Picture 1 (cartoon, each protein chain N blue to C red):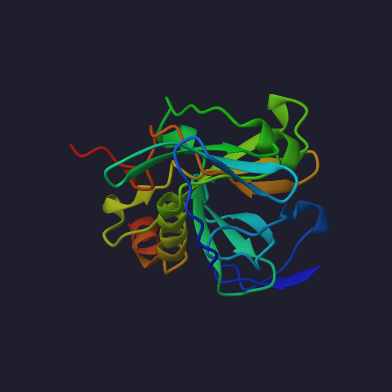
Picture 2: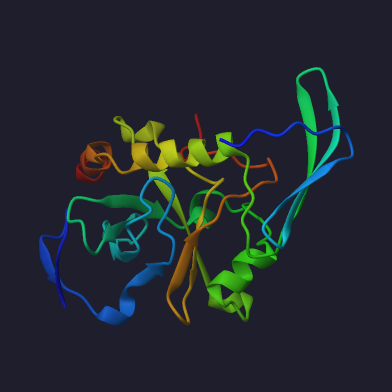
Length: 142
Length: 71
């Protein structure tokens, strides 16, 4: 199918690559379908593009690339809601809040995007353990 | 909004399967126990609102990144 995107113009996507947020995400409850598209050549930075809203995108990264120690437990509620059978099915992204200059950009480690790669169900999970916040600088201050 | 007065140890039921108990209350703090089915998500409201605000901020433009990638 063809979709309009914010950074990739109009592109052809495979319907099977769409991820489905049954309940949307906080602040965007009506947005239930997104697709992850690479933004940089090395695939470090990606965008989570809304299927229905051309201008709505989130900059996402693999949190483990910037925070190798990142670790959390998924509650049963989430495992059930996403129909997860095994850890291998899970893909994790963190939403970045891009700043200008980009060096000040932060990652939201408190609310990761969890995707079941088997059925493409996704959820922005809110972690309650108090260990992670919404703004973790992705570049170490030297 | 429905307003009910409860004492420590008393509960209210919401529907068939949600029960909220006032464990204790002191000064302006109330300790609440919640029994609910697993599929009901329970969150502190201010945390949910923080995530909502962060999502809104994150959905704004990423000019910073585009400048950064051009370097």
